[in-house]
Length: 232
Image (tube, rainbow, N blue to C red):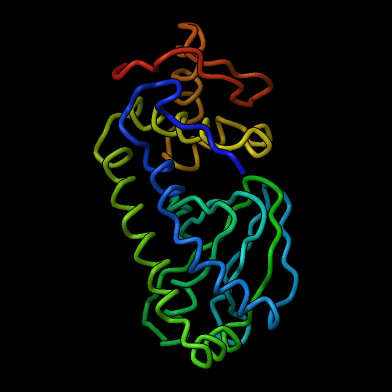
C-alpha cells in the first residue's frame, strides 16, 4: 500500500509517521504472523468501535492486525498512545504486564479508526509459540522500533502549542493511503490525539481552510494545497 510523503507538499523534515512506516520491522512482523496465525482465531472490529485488551490472564491475547488503522489509548483517561497501521502486532505491553502480574499495571484499548481485521492469539499460545520457535528477538525488534517512534513523536506533539500539534496530525493523516484517509473524520482524529476541545480544533481547521491550505469535505481531509504555516 502506497503512502504519501510530507516532502511532496510541505518540504519538511521527515514526519514521525513517515519515519515509522519506512523503518517498520516488516520481516520480524511477518515471522510472527506466520508462526502465530495457525494458533489464532479471526478478529474484526468495525470503524469507531473499541476493543479492550483483557485485564485477566485467561482472556488476554495478542492482536495481529492485518488490515485497517487503529489508535492505542489508555483505558483510565483515554489518552492517545500511538497509531496502529496494518500490519501490526498489538497488545504486547498488556500481555507482558498480565503474564508477569505487574502490580498496578496500566490498561489499554484499541480504537478502530477504520474497519479492522486480523487475528486474535490467546496469551498462553503466544508465549508457547514464541518459546518453541525462539521468536523473542523478533518481538524485541518490534518493541524497540515503537520506542524509537514514540521518541520521534514527542518532538512533534509534546511541549508544543495547540496549532503545532494540529499541524503535525494533519500532515500525518495526509500520509495515510486515500482508502483509509477517506474513512477518517479529521476533527475526531485530532481530538483523540491532542485532548483539545472540539471548538478549538474546529477553529484551527477553519483558519487553515480559509487560508487555502487544506480542503475538508464532509469531515474528511481531501487535500493539502500548499505548505502549512510553521506558526499560528
